[in-house]
Image (cartoon, rainbow, N blue to C red; front, side, top):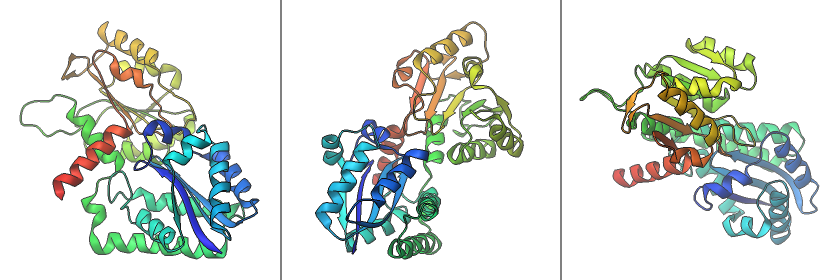
Length: 333
């Protein structure tokens, strides 16, 4: 038996393909279950994040394993098999092990060195173990990857050099909002609406609060989850039904819900901008009064792309963050 990885990432596929390939929740469990029943697979786990979808498997046949995993990925996602195989990469045996170690160290992340990937690897291993899909070989490999990732951060400082996806996204967003000459490009004094209350949203709220943003409002499908997060950072909560009104009063909207469909449409943003122009509070930005910055950290995307074309609106998505991260790496090289 040998280790095989089949995956798609921001390196190999455009965001439009990645967001259709992502598997989370019940879909991830069903994918694990179906892979486990493939003839050539002895164990597996699925790593699905905002910039990658990877299946790690212990297989007895290379070609059979690749074919089975690609077919199942296509079946459990919205990406046709021919499109998926054009964007997919395959690593086998030592190359597969090296790839997982690089992923755990943050070397394969959209923003090199970001620390969230370790938690995501741990969650992927835990889910596979919970559903009986994790073989002893993959369990040992996962433990090695977690230890290696921790050691890389402790001994190299890569996490200090690399910014998280959230931090870089917020930095780009802050740069879109005009403030007095000479002041730092932070979120200090700016109103922020966060849509979602998961791990990425929690990190966004924590970072925004640390920079002095306020007021911060959290809207989430499950009010109790939003309330817990709001209490922790002195924020308030809102209903998703009130998004247009809440967006009209915000300088920055951060979306990361983990929803399978778009949460904020161009029509919703248009309504918010009309409310803003009719008298809602707004910050003066690069496009004049009422500039609204939208930061979409979700995959699949939470915000309709057309919203970024509206007058007075700036949309920052994962593609923009990835480009900024790549440019930063080139500057440091």
